[in-house]
Length: 103
Image (tube, rainbow, N blue to C red; front, side):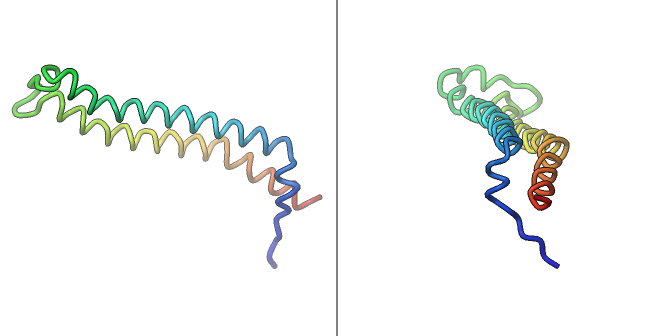
């Protein structure tokens, strides 16, 4: 037996509007942080080349470590989003869908 989802009821549900607003705000925050961090590499390399040339360990300099840190930041952002979605957003969405099918 397949369950049909009442999309109109979901869209009109104030809980869905609140969920959408919370999720959008959270995602914008993550996106702004990631864009700033991403563009720090080319901006830093262009305007602060001496900083990026500082040797940290052997042949590794600050620029290489900063570039590699972008992978760590991307995975951290993915982890933060996944944890938040699993903890908050998914349960809220499931409740809204369940209630829309009852009515």
